Length: 54
Image 1 (cartoon, rainbow, N blue to C red):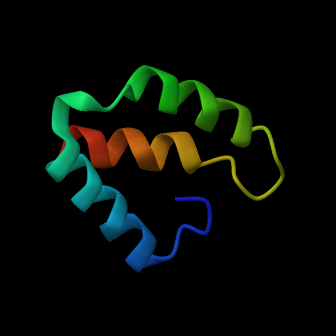
Image 2 (image 1 turned 60 degrees about the horizontal axis):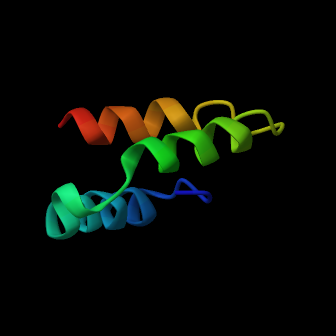
C-alpha cells in the first residue's frame, strides 16, 4: 500500500478477500490517515477506502 504500485494494490485486494472480517479496517484506516499527512502519500487513505468499497 505504501509504495502504491499496481502490484501492491492488487496484494491489498487479495489480503482483504482472504482475511475478510478478521481485519481491523478501522485501525488500518487510522494508520493510513497518519501516513496521508506525509508528502507524496495524500491519497493513500482514499486508495485503501476505494479498494475496501470494491
